Length: 408
Ligand SMILES: Cc1ncc(COP(=O)(O)O)c(C=O)c1O
Image (cartoon, rainbow, N blue to C red):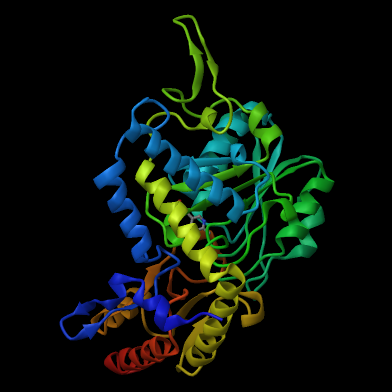
């Protein structure tokens, strides 16, 4: 198990106050996680001592920068158990990963009448790129509904996942319901009908062991900033033979083998998909975030989050009028989205903020999920490796105070 107090000491921001005399209670890691000192330090060190462009210069700084940046890619490769670092593409965030696949693979492979299957619980990052590419290619986007308890309606899968489906793209963990979906089962079902499978792992890679070879996914995307790493860096994993057959997404420096004024040829993977000067400090920072999580052990991270989530779900259920969205603790990750009868989620978040408690309010980039759940928005508390039971207790006390302010 994790030593939470020791972990908290690693995060400088957690030692700060939200307002004078009001300690910060950060319950918004699902939106973006805080950063431990080693990640902050490694980026600082890079700019102080190693800053140079990568893959280009023959001078020492450039070699050091390239080694640090490519070394990070190797550790990220091991972290998700990809077979080869050529399959691990640096992108800006999960969103860019979906867009890369939609524009590169989608434009080359989708024909009128082809289908892309998503689910109704997706983040907009896993909805909108497919809608755009469907409009351009004549393909159709279909969705697998969810049940009232926030789990996927698997009974409808056989009607929706057919030989017309070319790609099934779904989230491993919902950022609103917290639902942990049966990833392997869904990937196997996609492969059975000849479709590719893409996993949105933005809420999975930071929180549980992920093994792309065991899952056998064709693509998988996640963001660095939700897993103790910096913003501006994420990963698209793709199987080598599929990436090899795909055209480039963006053109420019670093992604070419040879350029003439008549035409160009492409660099080998992963560089074919990495045009231009990348987020070098960010890649290095993500490598250190991966080291940090690896040292904790992802099995421990997952077990601790389950424990704190169970505690939170029970504590929240004591608040009058509070309705939690999503399934029981057994089927969810460290996210609790809720509504309180008579209180707008924005009012909840504002009142909690006065007590130093940071949560998120709104649609959490999942408008269809909220619409189908019969609400416009929700409040969401999310938990990570540094969340304590005392912080959850403060959340519940503050929610009870908020109810009193509104005379509920
Ligand atoms: C499930 C899920 N997918 C995708 C994303 C998009 O991540 P980013 O905004 O870092 O690209 C998020 C971020 O909230 C998410 O929770």
